[in-house]
Image 1 (cartoon, rainbow, N blue to C red):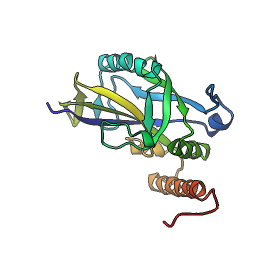
Image 2: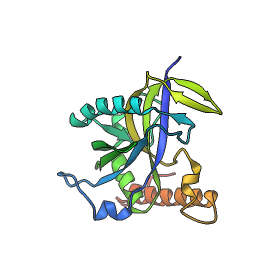
Image 3: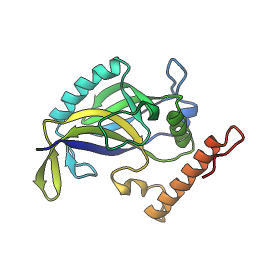
Length: 203
């Protein structure tokens, strides 16, 4: 089977106060905690990762965390390469809670990290998304099983969780209004950041 880039996204629930009043790293950067992935369950992309595969990959990834290399991007490409100019965060701790993989993440004071921080502070819903390479095996009913050749690359922060229904708890009117609200909020925040020095680029 041919390996491909596999991207899986979970809703990352962060209280905006967690940024301004919550934990901080020794360097003073904000820290957030949340669920990175769930083992043994069908995800929003109709894929299943066995607990054994995730255990193996998390054991390997612990060394990446310890070596201060567990970085990720704000919005990720369909690539196996982490682009350092887009890095927004670094995972400081990773552990298991039942079948859920948990992480403590430091938001870095990079260009992408400052955007991520501003989005969370303003209540914009973000997703945390694993990026890896591996092959898939059909299980029937549209479901796919991730095979043993899977290799975890990193976790990125993204705008849209794999399961669109994750937005529905935000407003009663429905998913389309929530998406529009979030996009408008993102545009406002980006404009504020880009124009902070008194000059604005032409859009």
